[in-house]
Length: 228
Image (tube, rainbow, N blue to C red):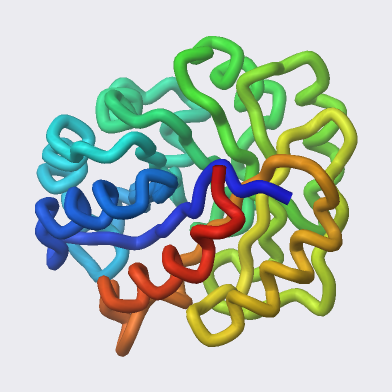
């Protein structure tokens, strides 16, 4: 297994962009992923629109992702211009199908049409039990990936990690943190085999629900030997 990215989710208004730039310079494989959910902007984990724009325009690292949650996810699916504007400058966009009260509120066909209309992004589909019907719709769509994530931000490790799905680029999330990462990377490597993949964590790099830069650095140190 090789890691293309180590994705770190949840920086918010309390974080200075210069600190993220310094980390990216030391760990070029890091991908900072920004949560976008208009109804919660300005809270922990959910930066304001101004912070997001500053990050998308001025962050000097190589890899930037946005995770669309709640009304941002629904807005993208319906072609909302305000959400599309906030996505500008990002490289990958995660569609959080398991978070933010979106279940049953979006037509998968409409969602896939929007993905096809925006080939400039790689779209990550949060995946888990009950979302199997999405897979056939992704056949032939090159700009997509699958994230195994039963945790959906709750910080819970799965009992076991699944093998990659044939025909899909796959990544892994759920309960990873500096204390368990070394052992979990061995388990993910065993499940993933020779493929190139990525990992993502959110709750595991927080202390008292605050984004913890020291934990971020520890995670990246532990991951370095697996990275491209």
